[in-house]
Image (cartoon, rainbow, N blue to C red; front, side, top):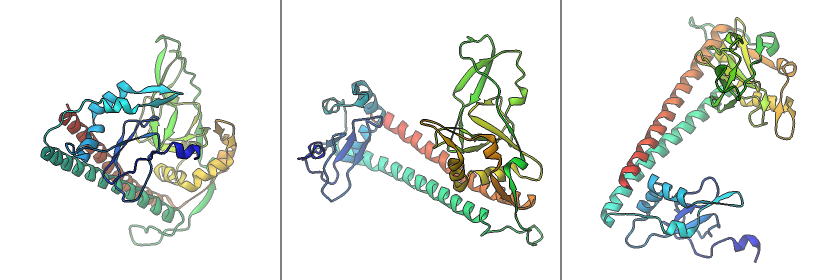
Amino acid sequence: MSCTEKRISKTKLVKGDILYSRVGASYGVAAIFDKEEEYGVYVSLTHIRANQNLDNIFLKHFLNSPKARIQAEQGVFQGGGVQNLNVGVVEEFNLAFPSKIEQTKIASFLSTVDEKISQLTQKHELLGQYKQGMMQKLFSQQIRFKADDGSEFGEWNKFLLGDCVDILTNGLSLDQNMNGNGFKVTRIETISNFNIDLSRVGYVDTQSDISSYRLVVGDILFSNINSIAHIGKVVYIDKDYDIYHGMNLLRIQFKKNLDKKFMFYELSQKTFKQHFESIANKAVNQASINQTALKKTELCAPCLEEQIKIANFLSAIDQKIEVVAEQIEQAKTWKKGLLQQMFI
């Protein structure tokens, strides 16, 4: 028997059994096994089968409730640098439950909430796929807009990024050890999924002129020093911020006759992400792009009027995606509140 086989449970899974994660950062998550095929259970999972007094779906929701989470956090331990939750700890979870009939009604109601979240999640994914498909067609010119009078727009023009932008670096040096004796500054350090992380705070000398580093609407931040996964990511600044970009980000300002939102969408294409990865200087834990290489990036754009139409069209899709994302978070928050009240 191989080492891998030794780590597989011999207990046969039955449809309706519960699998509960107990190893790693994602410990304490339960799911229903819903297949008819034969599977074994890996050591990182706890195999749970509800007895005749418990509805299995009710039990799954309990295991995913805040009350069970608290008990899991109290029982977890570090083993070899990895979080572990022993089966014995799970067996000692404190659970109060109503009659089997009421359990089933609660489980059915919570499953309806889960289905709603699943539908919203699928809608969010489909909108994202639709946006990517439309971006590909718009920027490859398979789809063209027309002028308001019905006439055709002219051909797209090619140009180099360096010919149409000002690229600014942030010369601010943050000192975490000034103990509040300087001017407190919040600085963007990371871009992820077109969002910005505002967790970095430090201090600069109060005599420093930081007005020129302030972010304004239309600025685009470009990740030029980061892991290869993040290199070349861009984010559009949609409001004025009293925050500043870090040394691992470039601040790009486009010149006249170019719509800033259009340029953001062009640079956020997957093809450009791949291009930036290909021209990056790669180190062990970090990659970088110098401004000279970045400025040689070739872009292509139509007249300003068509740029605006494309940007508005894609922005409208983004707004729909944001609405659905908010609905998902609201539904998850509502479900969490329900679980909090049901499993006291």
